[in-house]
Length: 118
Image (cartoon, rainbow, N blue to C red; front, side):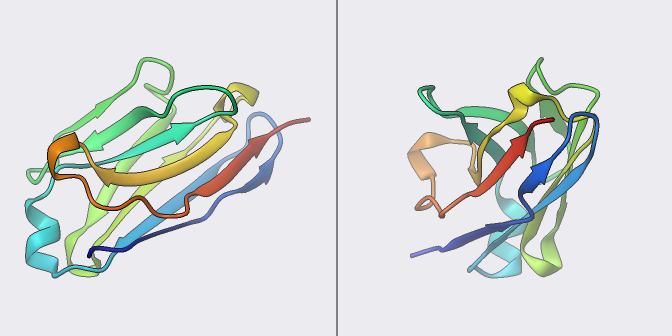
């Protein structure tokens, strides 16, 4: 079973930045083939996809983070990243990584908490 380990969250003030990382316990080759993304779940809300990156490094973002967040990947390290700039209080959530397609999704990791508050 693939294990996902997210890290990099923290407590920041509005306007600040964070960089999240997620490493998968699979081969680099298998990781390189997957379209992966970053999801987030705020208290009382459903988990939502905020950014995704394909095997060809094509990216797509949710409207709420477009222009502020940037997703990237390092297949050799089996790791994806989420650079989050200009953070807002509404970005507060637990952030998770996973495959985008629900029918082939890996087991969810523990996530990493991001709190944006003044």
